[in-house]
Image (cartoon, one colour):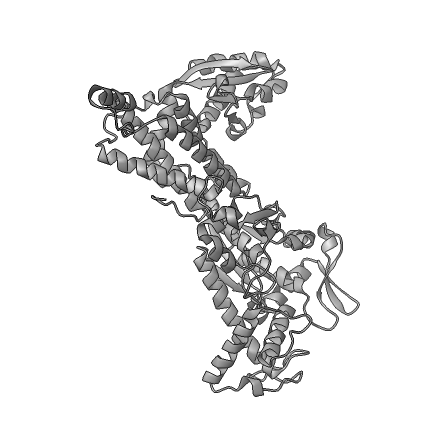
Length: 596
């Protein structure tokens, strides 16, 4: 019997007690939903397999003492199939012990469902637009963006496991001042000049500048001979912006796609596949910025002041109103944010029911204006728009911070990290910590094959379970004759309980946008499995004493060998663990090796 089945049973008992007039002043409308009846694993196994505080939750509404109400629940639970005993403890806890067959039923449930075990459809019917990474196309993905790649893709997988339709989206900032600074940096590098004060540094700038020159030469364009003076027009005759030039425009139009290609390659190599690569510039070229402003104006949220156009965001909870068109006629950055949210909610293909933004720590001040804009469009902040703020990543080696990248200057890039420890360790280590907290990445630890390395510890559990399968096959052990009710040792019970908790954990990880909970669960499951492996045998251990002969050797083998029904049951338990670990690692985008 799973924790979910017990929650349902307790919910039904509460309604039965009400209908029979045994629950005091409690009425059916005061009983919370089934999911609110938490069933927990007691810290002390002597208290049973599972515990519930349902009586303590309902006692005040029932006008009863918690222990008295708990006794009523206990009486009903004792008569339920699969429950061995029930005890009321403390102020009103209900401690439940399952019979061995009921506890072990989870094994067959896992094996029958396979990689779908725990997956559900409670988010079905909703389209969640998950935007993450979205780094400027002015350089390689740095370590902060790498964290969002690991967390974001893992979150998308978890949400899909809960039935949601997820659109993974990368917002490509190819419009604005950062692109101008990028182009200026490339021009300076091409001429062997120092990087502009507000420019970008690193060997990659020299690489991209050279690639632009080579590509332009192949097209018959001598890019270095183009005018460097401000103003002028692009190749289509459109006037260039202030401080721009024909040469800078040529570098821009060629270099930005190069960086775009590099970012796409890095994401693909990191096992992150986006459904949409959205170009900021399209919001302007397609007139969506103007349309979004017009929509807000029609809603009464736009006004003119000091020659500028303003969004009256204070009407919707922001701390001040926001300029969207400056007095010089140029758009403020927030204008594109408005248009982009409107686009997500109303696009023809996969319009978002929920737009989830994953932003860096330096964007905390954006939340107020973004939520105000959401409300101005008639949506619900926190529901139709959700903003997640990630914290910093520190990369350590030999106890010291790692800051230098040969290619990108004073940063660590996604390629630096994966070159050092691989994709598996990179993704797992970045996804296993709550994004709300800073994280230290220890390169020495994460490249080691020790139990101190969390990704190795979990992967080794999977590899070990695969080895058990190989040994079982060699010994002729199969599922035939398996009796899972024989899985009744303390070690068996810990593994069974861990398996039973996976469905609730997976649902919680999706609802809380917390993929790190999957990693923590996997580490707990791996720990219980490793302990189980050390005390329970599927296959007889090999004889280790070379001096043992004859009857003595046979006695050792007999003592180590479980009888067939027990061996088959243990093999099934082993395979159930293997199934769930593989599923969990896949949700984090990490491989499950069969040998290590």
